[in-house]
Image 1: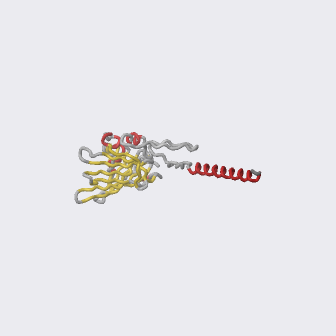
Image 2: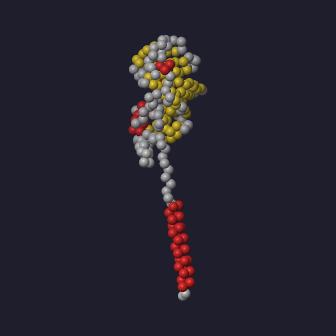
Image 3: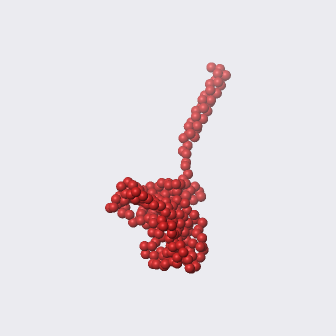
Length: 246
């Protein structure tokens, strides 16, 4: 076999070897796993990573864990929002809105009644001031006249008080662009099924429903939130008494 023929064999062998290496590398690169980074806003139970790129961990929400997860939430110290409540009954329904301002432990609600009058309240959990347009305020021990009652909404404290066995569904879900912890109960002794959407970022109840026999009898929603803070005028009584200086 002459030298020229040996050189051709050698070159062919090298070409095949190089091609095999390229194909092997191509296959390896093609199998490189795609890493999807998690959302930068931790949900309840998430452990935020540091700037080195540590991955966030999401704790699974289940009927067994949801009360523990919700117990870790806290509400903003200052915010404003509007709560819309719908109530349904045989042959009719009603809807009303309540403007809510919160700051420094005080909560103000302004709820327009079906009569056209507006009920105003200011409470710090100890005392509640109540007045209607054009009237002086009455000051009473807060008792059951709480900010949540004045908004006619349930709270996540109600979720924490549920018998764990009554919770049949719990997970993370989105409602109108708001990330929430969702809770649904079985029918209680009166036949009511309760549904709650608690804002994962704010700890505020953003939506709720009460159903009876599969029909909605109550619905509330407060999806938009202004965290710029309320106005100083929100915490002044009709007689000019300033309850909170901003």
